[in-house]
Every structure is written in C-alpha cells, then in structure tokens.
Amino acid sequence: MYPLLLKAPLKDYLWGGNRLRNEFGFVSDKEKIAEAWMLSCHKDGESIVLNGELEGKTLSEAISVFGNECLGEKSKEFPYFPLLIKLIDAKDRLSIQVHPDDEYALKNEGEFGKTEMWYIVDCEDDAQLIFGLNREVSQDELNEKTENDTITDICNFVPVKKGDVFFIPAGTLHAIGKGILIAEIQQNSNTTYRVSDYGRLGADGKPRQLHKKQASEVIKKTPSVLDNDNSVLQKTEYGSVRQLASCKFFTTKYIELNGTLNLKNKDSFVSVLVLEGNCELFFSNEKIELKKGSSVFVPADFETSITGKAQIILSNV
Image (tube, rainbow, N blue to C red; front, side):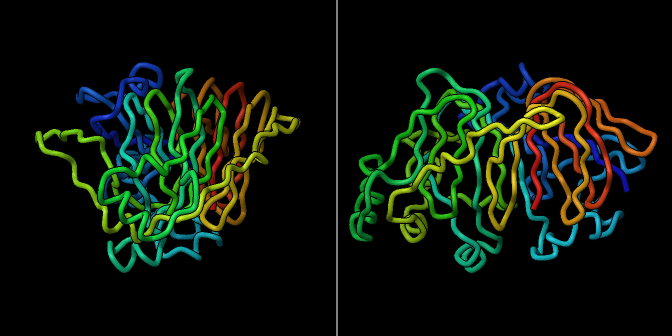
C-alpha cells in the first residue's frame, strides 16, 4: 500500500465558474468547472490514481487491490466507501435543495442519504447562503410554500465570509449563494431534491427537474443552529489546527501547516486536500509534491509526514 495522488472528475453544472480552472489548475474542455470531486468512489464520477503502480486505476479499483484494511476499522461500519469530497465554485447561486437521510434515501433512491459540511474557502464581500429555516413551520405550511414556490419566505439567509463553517445534517434546507468557493465533505451520495431553481433552464433549454413532493417529506421543519465552537485555531508544533466537524459520518480538520505534520490514523484512511500553498508528503523512501488543489488518499495505519507551508483539510471517518 501507498498514498494515492488523485485526479478529480470535473462537473460543468450551469451555475459554475472558472476559479477551479484559473486558480487551482484543473483542466477541462468544458466552458465551466462547477465542481471537482477530490475524493470519490461514486458511480457518477470516480477519482483516478496519478502515481505509482496503480496509476490510471480508479480509486475503487485501487482499494480492491489494497484490500479493505486500507480503509480502517471505522469504515467497517459502512457498507460502501463512506466519503465524497468536493471543491465547489458557485459563480451563480445553486438551487434551493435538501438531501434525505439514510432511511429515506435507501427506501426511495437505492443509495444512502447525505449529511455534509461546508468550509468557505473564499467568497465575494456580499455573499450569502441559505441554511435551514428562519422559523418553525407546520407540515401544511411547508407543503404550501414548497408547492407555490414561495419557499424563500421561510429560508434562513446567512451572510458568509472566508473561513466560515456550516454543518448541514440530512433534512436541512440549504443553498450555496453566488460568489462562493466551498470545500464540501459529505456522505458518499449524489441524491438531491430541488425545491426551487429560480425558473432557470438547463442545457436542454427546459426547466431543471424539481422534487417538491420528496423535499417536503424530508425537510426539517425547525430552524437550524449555527455551531460557533469550530472557529478556534489551536497552536501546534507543526502550525495551527481547527476542528471543523465531527459526526458519525466524518471528522474534518483545517490545518495551517508551517513545519512537519506526522500523519498516521490507525482506525481510518485520511483524505488530504490542499487549499493553498506547497508541501511534500513523505512515505517510505518516496515523496509526493503537493500544491493547491492536490488530493491524496492515505491508507489507514500508514505512516506519512507532510512538510511545508500550506492550508490543508484532513478528513477521515
């Protein structure tokens, strides 16, 4: 086993921009790059290995070669690869949407639900997003607002700034606003129920599909609460670290690296995502050069070190 440097599948959704191309160096023949799936075993887009003897294989193929022990003990709690990690460039606002929980998604969609977390990598000065409801509503009112396309009346609009964190459990109504660049850590699911898409037309010239019935069945009808306990940077010998989220699905940390971080997680694989700067990942007698936009899968119980000056997100289960 060895750490896998990954190539991300890219998505050209209509609301995307070109920051991922211009600032992160992603290459695509599409006009826009809305999303880069930095760690993915999902059927809708798999990461490809860029280094070593498994170069050219998908991440799921590499895991099959390594064996499930590369995922760690905690991954045994999941009957599937547990994480999907993205960079999202919202030049325009996304649809108002919600994701179901595991029970609803397995029953109706044949895949697991989606709890997620957003880290605001950057944003315009006046950027805002939707995070849950602004008050408690009844099921009848929710159905009425959903059906009549007046859902914004009960949406909680929140101004955002660089470094903000939003933990979004399944069932939370939400929407990324325009002018926001996000790192998203989520369950490995691609099920989304759109409530409103502002009347936009898709690439086929038709309004994009809405899922009002499903959405009204899964939206939590009470306001969401922002967690402000994840804003503290703690000094360490390798720089500073900030806990972003910890739940039964994933744990995520933000690190301002300025030195050497020794990395080994006995119980889980680790995703390394570089948001800014340059560093080197050392293992055995080898190293991988990392830069802004690099993504690495480190097998469980595998010892590595990362040296340099960079902003990094580490995620594991």
